[in-house]
Length: 511
Ligand code: BG6
Image (tube, rainbow, N blue to C red; front, side):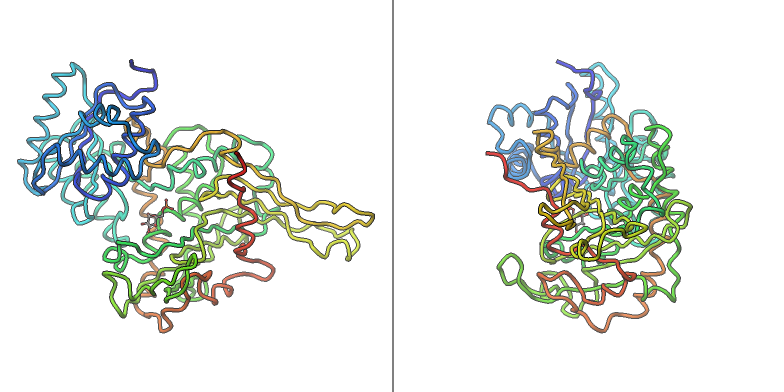
């Protein structure tokens, strides 16, 4: 049965169909969508890769991924069997036109069989070295031509720097219209990240104080307890600035700082986000060391386990200069945010995982309470907790019970799971569904990617010229390098580790 929200008939062509992303993220998400009846009635997943593999072998491997990673968990045999019928393997070289001709024929065949126009989604789940090649072949094979039906999906890294990002975007643009290009930043698919717009613009309560008159500073944190895991080879050439700041943290900054959108149109929202990047004060070469701190983890203890330092990780150079931690102080030079620091930080192998945005409000303009009432005073703060806890916490002052006027900080909490009693979909479910529905709101436009690179290039250039002399400069399991405090203006603080715990909505309350 087709529901009105169901996408049109679709063929998913996944280049790199035998790879990790397909196994870990894409197919589990497509399976979850199918279980929620959100897949089209007619769909096909064609996994393309170079290795020799049968449909059966591929399906067995993908079933293993679904068991491990899908939200619906262990699929019943019949559910998996029903879904797996849609998966096919095509062996092919990404650099041979023949591969693409065969795909074109397959799509034409399905179109005939289904008696309907087929949406064709070409997903590049390959190593980045293929990103510049596949679009050219799709173009040559005539598979990019139909602006309505053909779409291309690309994951980060979108370029290694501004120059390569411009070149990649040019290759994409030579073969596809911008409206056909879906650049994924998976952070944008997270419910809590989408909720930033809902919270800001569906509640008249907060917008009037969301500016320099009331906000003292904004802290954006996305830290992890994990190390580089099995991705040392990639990461050692990327580092935290490219891996997290250029994309995920910049997206969060845009959502927190942007002006209200006029409508919920994809380009209207993306325009407002790009405006933020254009307003960020450029980081002058000479100021890089004052505005940005980098770090690399040494060995230490995380979650009670001894873990190796970054330089001892697999596929990492033993004298690597790659940063696994970055903190920045940025300013958004416009009427709303003039003078308000935005502190951003991200890192691997920190005490624990936490992504959150903290808006710290200014103190009261006049302190009328006696000094002894306010010894525990902490400024009001709103924390949007993105993960692992999903919710919002507002900290404010209240009178402590007792005969005296004694003020203490208290918290009001909104917890997604408590409020909605459903488990949030995985980011990839949302993103894949949006691609099928041809909705580009949650995807990065070329100009946004380029603006983010432009902003960070002085940092990358200065760092390349002056390699760090103090790496490793933080122990695994700590909260990063000590000199990160130097970025803060007087009276500002990074949310302390304990505050992150206290602020996070509490889990496990339900029986
Ligand atoms: C990816 C980075 O984009 O995001 C990884 O490449 C990082 O290094 C990951 O671990 C974090 O995403 P999430 O959704 O697991 O917090």
